[in-house]
Length: 380
Image (cartoon, rainbow, N blue to C red; front, side, top):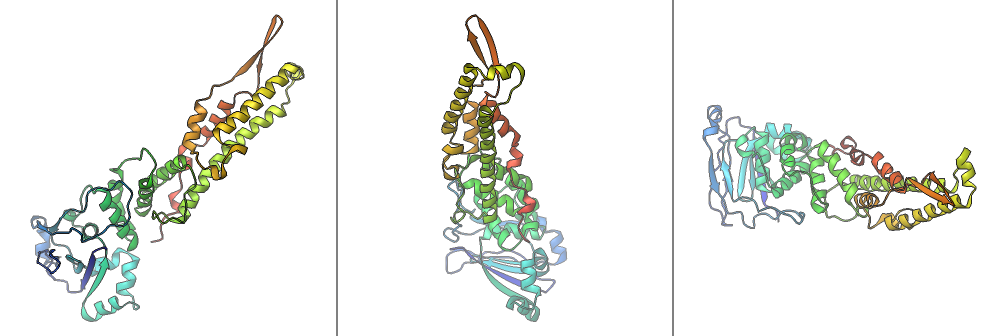
């Protein structure tokens, strides 16, 4: 289970904000934060200390891809932050209710609207406490961003922490708040070299954090690598169904484009309409034999490439990347040489299937495989 976060909102403009540890029944320590006076806040950079807290077993992260970095660090930093108290089982944070309300529509509706108990209690009592089932380390980083507290905002985060930050960001609609920092965190992981479940997780995080370039590049990478449509019914990732459907559709469109080029190649062989010398040559048995050979060769290639009539349903078992590689392994046929008695003639024509298929793939520029983030960005 996730740890419990208690948020205490305090409308008092001068509430002390420090973090201290105290023993509780669970054997862990409580980290609490209170607001300091303006004079103390101005000197807050010097007032930092690490408070150790035993977090073993305190949080259980959501299902993650196979490659998971080390667990959450067993320490919190002591620093001045804001006006509102958050308690995450072992941790209690006091943060600014005004900043929280301004941070997203989620908190604005809860705390300033007339429909929620928390907002009414804050208005009547000047403070309110809310329990949240979220990761304390990820929450602390986001609150540090919210309160311009660089001591709690690391330059780099590990994979697990970034994932948990994304979960909280999406849950509380903190997309705009976290995005400027998250872009650098995402970039640190670099581009994937192979496709696995981590790739979908990275795509989802790019979507949450509004990294349009990463989102387009990753979605294009996935289109190239997947060997079957992604099952939208499996709850193994957080990627919205509409994005998965768009990726599956894009993959199928690429296959159809390549197959249409192949079908045109075969059709041109059967219905070639040359002029002049070529027209006379076409009537010869030799030319008809070449056309039959090339047409038969195309059928064999289609079977090997698993395209056209030889494709599995949904092109299962074949990726665009693998198809491109297999096409590159074929030999080009620019022309045939006919020899009859003592004469030799070169017969150009629509023989080179490799070039035709390579050109078809080349027309589908890699960036065009990716999805346009503007069409899929989350509703904030």
